[in-house]
Image (cartoon, rainbow, N blue to C red; front, side, top):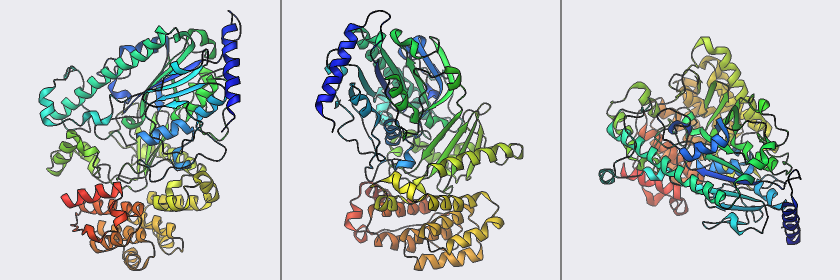
Length: 620
C-alpha cells in the first residue's frame, strides 16, 4: 500500500488549490459521478426509442451535456460488464468473462483497477454499493464501498469519484408471480409500445414490458435525486455526471446475449459549467461515435488529468485534447458471452458501423438452454411452453433452436436483428471483412476461452494475462480449428481428422466441437469419436465425442456422459458435463437421463451451479 502521508499531502495541496482559484485561474481536478442502472438497454427509454419510458431527469442531463447514441457494454451480464469497466481491459484476455466466477482473478501484472490511480492522485473514491467483480479488488481501489458510501465524507475541497448503483430495474424485479400481477396495474399504457418480433404476442409479455417501463421511470426519479443532491450542495458546476446502464436487458433473450438488446446501453454525460473547456461538444449535442465499456475507465482518468496505464485496452472519449469529430468516427465495438450462471456458451460479436457480426463457437448450444434464474420470470416460462407446443413463429422459435456459427445483421435496416444475412451472397464481402475483423481481435487479445473453464481455473487463473501471452500460439491454433466450422464439410474434414488425432487434448476438444457443429454422420468421424468416448484421458473430451454421436442420432450419449459425471472430482469440469447433459435432454433428439446423486462426488455435488443443474434434471 502507498504511504498514507502521500494521500494526505495530495488532499491538502488539492484543497489549497481549490480555495485559491479565482476566475481565470487553473481549476482543480473535476468531481466525477457515475450513476449506473441495472439491466437497461436503449430499447426501453423514450430518450432513444419511440414507445420507451419517459426519463425526464436523465433527459435533463442530456440537455446540459452529451447524449451518446452508440454506447456499448462489452459483456451482457453484470459481473463481466463491471469487471470490464473497472479494469479497462477486455474480460476474455484477463480471465474475467465467466458469470458467476469460479475463482477471482488478479489484475494483469503492474495494473490496478482505475479508481486506484484516482486515489493516488488525491481523489476520494466511493462506491454505493454493488461491486460484483470477477477480479481481485485489492485495498487501493475505494476509500469506501458500502451502502453508506458517499462523497460527503471526503476532506474539505478534495475532488471525488463516486459510483451510485440503482438496482430498481434489475432482472429480479420482474420475478413477480401471477398473484402479484393481480395486485399491480402498470402505469405505462400497454398500447404505447410494440413487442419485440422475437416475442410471442401475449398478455403476459405485454404486461411484463409495461411493468419494466414503470421500473425505468422509478429508476429515473432515483437518478434525479442524486443530481439534486449534488445541486443542493453547490457541486453541480464542478461535477461530471455519467448516467448509463450496466448492460442490456431484461426482457427474455436480452441479458446474457450478444444481441443489441444485451449490449447497446444508454449513456448521457453531464458536462459541468466550470469544465466545459474539457470538451468541444456543444451543450445538448449527440455523439454518434462508438464508445465501449473498456473506454470508460480511461476516460475518467483523462478527465481527472491522470495518466492512463498502457496495459488498459480502452481509449478516452472525453477530456482535454480529445476531438469530438475524431470520436464520432469511431465505429467498432466488441462483445463476449461465455458461461452465465450454470449455462455454458461461447459467443463473440463485432460491430462495425451499421453491421453486426455474431460468431457462435458452439452453435448447437441454443440460446434458450435452461438457466434456473432466467426461468423464474413468467414470460420466460411462457415462451418455452409455447415453443414446446409449436405455437411460435420461426423467428420466435429461433431462441430455442441451434444457431448458425455466423450471423450478420444490417442494423440500419434491421435494428432488432431478425434477418441473418450471412448466407446472402450479396453480403459475402461484408461477411468476410467482419469475420476477419473479429478473428484478428480474438487472436490479438488473446482470448483465453479457447481453453475449457476448468483448465483455466487450474492452470491460468493465478495470472491469466501472462498465461495468454505464454500460450498465444496454442490459442491461435485452436481458433484455426474452430474456424473449420465456417468451411464446407468436405473442405473441413481433413482438418477435423487431424485435430481428432492430435496429442494436444485441447485440439481434440475443438475438433469434436466442430464435429457437433456440422452434425454430419460421417463414417470416419463416427469411428474416431467412438474411440474417444472410451479411451480419451480427458473426461470432457469423452463428453464432447458423445455429444456429437448423440446429436447425429448414432449412439445414445447417456452412459458416456453419466459415467464421466460420476468420475469427475472437479466442480467446474462437472458443470460443463452437466451442460451437455441438459443439452442432450432438452434439445433434439431428446435423451432421458436418470441420475443417481449419491454417485456424484460429494464436493462436486455441493458446488452451487452444479446443484442447480442437478435440481433441474431431477425435477425433469
